Image 1: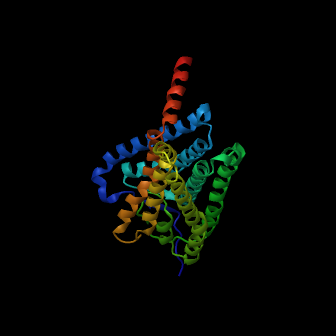
Image 2: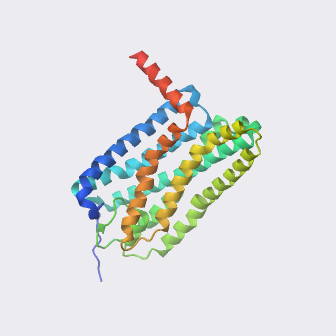
Image 3: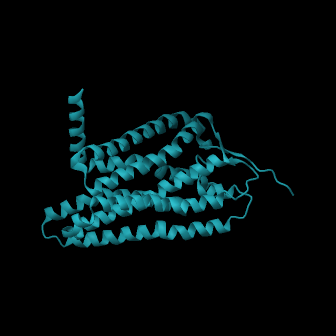
Length: 309
């Protein structure tokens, strides 16, 4: 029996809460603007202020770049969904959104892993820290994070692009997420699920386990420091990163452990909001509020800028 291939999807967004759509639009637009400004500000400060030339801040600027990518890839369509009650997106547009969403998510996992290694060396092996974490090493680790994020998503998208979509074309989500997209297909996708699971082990599970290992080592080292002031200073250098790691991995685990069918799709949307919008918004706030160097760098940069004008 011949089945007609559909060429676009209708993203429904948040159909069950239409009465609040305009309020949510204003709120999400404000969060989106603040997310862009705060993450761009961190990138500019790290590039322009000499006090922020350490590896930790270099990786933080890369994390901000990843946050800008993930929020810009998804939020404009979501905002349009809130205003219009749903938008049409082509199949290729859906694949493109899935591709960049996957790259930014994977890159964030790997960059958080690189940052944990940086904190591990700084606290557990300070004598070799400068010789190991030089500028070349930081650039290489950042480049590897982005390239390694690119490779598995290329494989996944090539497999997904071979699926057939013959209807219905109504997509009950605010962006083209991986699981719901597979369920829209009228092709067999067991192989894709297996490949995705196999790739998640080296790209998500292993980095997460490595981060846990580094923080166990960091905690042991901090507890062995005799002075209370020394322990507090050592912990303060990694507390922001630990908070971001807990928030990011916590939401991702919650999203992909939650059932994807039935009424739980609404829970899935809300949980997805936490890492597609919440985490990019909160990351710069967490690092800025708990970091005096960033505050001082901001004051220094603004004062220099104001003097020029």
